[in-house]
Picture 1 (cartoon, rainbow, N blue to C red):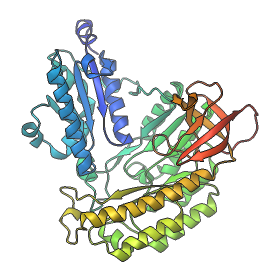
Picture 2 (cartoon, rainbow, N blue to C red; picture 1 turned 90 degrees about the vertical axis):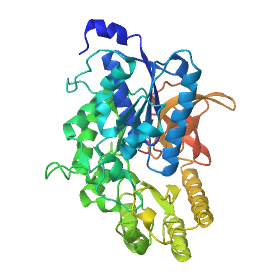
Picture 3 (tube, rainbow, N blue to C red; picture 1 turned 45 degrees about the horizontal axis):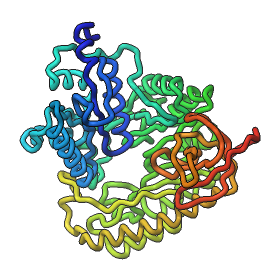
Picture 4 (cartoon, rainbow, N blue to C red; picture 1 turned 180 degrees about the horizontal axis):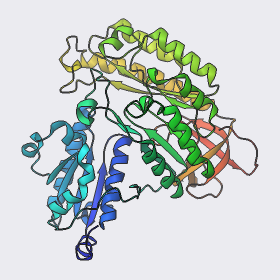
Length: 457
């Protein structure tokens, strides 16, 4: 631990955290925040009050890389206009992907921290601020999270071994590795003690968790153990980023039979054409996917399905684009994220022949989005008339005054829609019972009820 003299110096310093990209980055930022807080640093909410700015970047797509760099340069401009010098520390995917090349490209940045170096953030911040203070030692038994809210993401793995031809993640995050179960369970317990009511398990490929651990370590066994931890709190467990091959008999049974594990299944398909999937270095075909989704619907009645589709992959023909559109319309996923293919530097797909013209790509993307939204809005409307439990996430100013905002089991936080409760009293973190009376787009209107009756999920 830092000495009292060094802590008194650190106590006067405040960090501003800026996070870009996916939920996995949110978890990484939270860990860095916890390390810095443990070392004695304070947190700022704006540039003017900050002594150092920590930007956790995303580089999954070229557009995300551009946003990360643009945000950093905007912060640098704000720093230049301020009274005090505020060094910028760039963390995460962009430094992991581009390494030492950034030193010359971004002289505005005081230090670069790769994703696998983020546990050393205290030393880095000490150095850029010119403080001679030892860093906080890891492994002191404390869970490094600072989550304030009702839902929390928990990383169960990092890296990826799939090497899809369109994706740079394996080059950014490295090979796949599973977090030990005991570390995950300890983190979940700490989060529930802190008031969290839902944990969302995430990773690059959650379905294969445990493959590098022991023969009895599977995602299904982990989910059952996490369920045991959250049960006394009345908590929920959600898992995201499954792949079709990860839907084992054991996992399907767990999603069906363990009450705390929500029957919300997130399976990115990207495409349904066997040829396109093979070129993507992915497995499957339209028929195999049909059989999988039919089985899931048969064995887990009432479940929610979320997926992801990509338009304009190199070599995609008009017929294959139509096939994907028809597949989405046929499957009627509750939620579908649609992306236009992006030629990412260093990936195999970026060097492939048959790159689709941008205008054609955007037209195909928009068709998929239109279909996905129509189906998603209809799926949301089908929940009208249900009585559900709602986790209250916050309070917002609505059309007729303050309203409670929450989400039900079929809505992943920060991804899907929300439930708006215009009347009634509750605190953030409360679980209330609501009748769903109306919908608009992905949003629902809920009316709070006092009846202590059986609800759905």
